[in-house]
Image 1 (tube, chains in turn yellow, brown):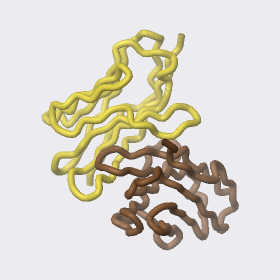
Image 2 (cartoon, chains in turn brown, cyan):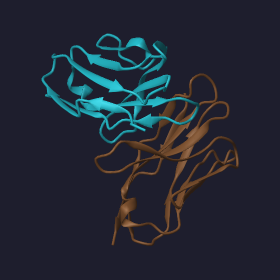
Image 3 (cartoon, chains in turn green, orange):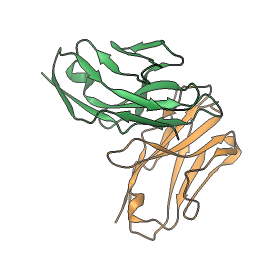
Image 4 (cartoon, rainbow over the protein chains, first blue to last red):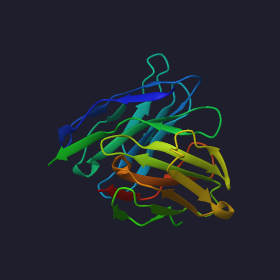
Length: 113
Length: 112
């Protein structure tokens, strides 16, 4: 079945450092890809998405590019802030049926001043 | 626009007891989802409704879990009897179109 693999955390960075969180997927067909973020004490929020190969999703300074050849959707940000500290989940949704989401295990990001 | 509402936010029960969670989706959203998120793991879909019909319940442990969506709006998820391994956060989400699911704050269940 479909699956998502994320790098394990926590990822610990200093403010203004460059961030990469790796995500690879296994799926049949052509899934849509997502990054969700969960801030402490809050629910999951959609951060960005890409629905086809070579699409780049972006939001709040975060970016991720849908790479079909490497089945990857790595999350990047050029300069992280303390307020970016959260758990980040990579997910896919299949291209048929009712778009069930399959999540990775999540990566905790800790940003220190 | 009001978000997805869930209650209670926290629940502690003993094993073999029953428990129910409630979800009120965003107004007008036809699709409703229940996910289970065990500590250290990503959310796993338990059941998906389209209006008041079930479209996917393949990962719902039907011997102890049940869910309904009355009149295609609110939904309840029930566990009876609960086991220790049911300790998790139960997330409700809703959507009106493809790809964008909105999540509620979740209900944290502890089974002792």
